[in-house]
Length: 402
Image (tube, rainbow, N blue to C red):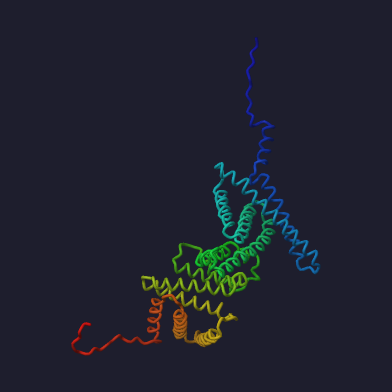
């Protein structure tokens, strides 16, 4: 009897297996699967709607203009929902299964950090979540092989939305700072930190893109501030450098976020970094470090007066306004010495700033005796104050304890 052997075939190489594998890949939500296709479709829709909206937003017909705006908002919402679904369906499953990349694990971690804001402050959560989802898809678009045309279109939309979101976040912080006495909000120092962190995020991620795409419309002052900021992006910074970086960020904010961070809020931010710098002067151990920090404080006082106080229109008290006028006139007079007598200019500038700061500190209820003592030593050095030695005379005689 003829014996027949059973032939074993490798099923992973058959035609039907290949088809089923492809279908499985499409059904499993991955970056190249269904969610990726959906995001791509929604992205194209929102870009078309954005371009239609920007081209027609100046049209006279209010009804048509409203239709373009409505379509843009609808496609934008659907687009964000698609990215959100990708995170929950795809990235979450990969992280749970232990197959996620470092980027995907980090993305999910950041996602939950944003979600936690929902109960603490809904307005910040709303802006932060949109910002996060847009950043995630911007990275996707930037990583595509044939990206040039798409990236150019997407960058215009991305810049427009991110500008609005950063303004919304900073405006929310301004409101919180005004309502700091409410138990609902964070302490003042944390709000200051959030403001500076947000300005730094913007300067790192959005401002370079803005400069690249709209270089002709960027002011000279803003470009100078950005180049100053770039110096702080390399290496570990000392406390003094951190303060100087905050000063530069405030300068950028005065160019870009004057409505989101109004003058009263910016004034409090300047006051915050002045206080921080005074504390660093008092706590500094080495003479060199103390002098460098003191020089920084003088620069902060100067920038505060040039960028902010000199533009102030509304004053709480008329006498404060008159007092500042005298200060500003003295400063302008001293500035005339800068080109011809630079050393004298620096000396008079220093004395003017110290005296003005001492006057302000004496109005405070806090104890600033240490920094005032330091200031007085500087006034003596600059021959603007005389030091009188302590001396006393006593009558000779017999003293009886009572």
